[in-house]
Amino acid sequence: MILSDKKILKSIKNGEIVVKPFRRKCLGTNSYDVHLGKYLAMYKDRVLDAKKHNQTEEVLIPKGGIVLEPGTLYLGATEEYTETHNSVPFLEGKSSVGRLGIDIHATAGKGDVGFCNHWTLEISCVQPVRVYAGMPIGQLIYFSVEGDIENYYNKKKNAKYNTITKKPMESMMWKNKF
Image (cartoon, rainbow, N blue to C red; front, side, top):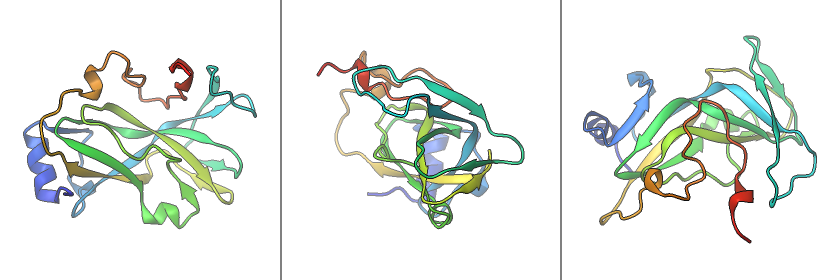
């Protein structure tokens, strides 16, 4: 079941959901709008290797914005830091962003109960488009969880994305054994 605006507010008041900074005007009927942070990262190598730590180059988005180009994967981060302790957060692009030809995630739209961080965005576009730090980029939708939780993400010893940062995080696939 998707949480309504009133249930999201109640969960924020109870500390079950944390959004920093919280802006009441960003709360929709059943979602919360998040914004593009000020950093983007791009992989340095054209060919990525799933078994290696692929290095990134970081860019600060200037006030005049930055043009994203097709064929490049950009890693961004949400301006908002979030915590979710009793529901499953899903991050979806805003329709206005989609209508500019921008995808904000390749596959990682679902968070885990216990995720406590800024969201890394896997941004791609179908034609050149200028984006700006602070622009609305997505919305968090919260689903209730049935049953007790044994393995919160922020308490997992092997969780790869627990380091809190405002900057985008590159793939940590190389830490897996395969």
